[in-house]
Image 1 (cartoon, one colour):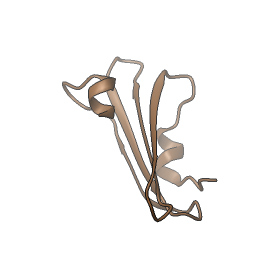
Image 2: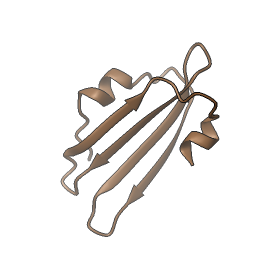
Image 3: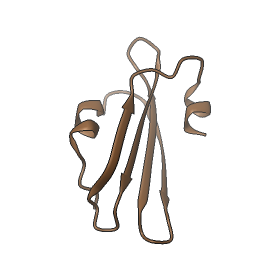
Image 4: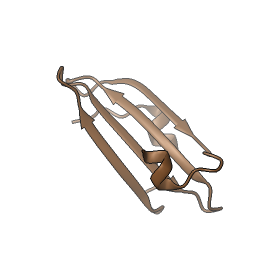
Length: 75
């Protein structure tokens, strides 16, 4: 279970359409990458890296990804 940090909770908005990519590394570290369209149509991105225990190691959110679609940003 992930222990989300402040950056995730400030970014989170379950009413917006989003796509997610989760990946687990050999040491149990997990990555959570999410992209969405804002209410104004901008592509936004969240990247979270979590330890095996679920503790947040790094979280970062981007309010805009100029020139990138959701698909391109997720890639």
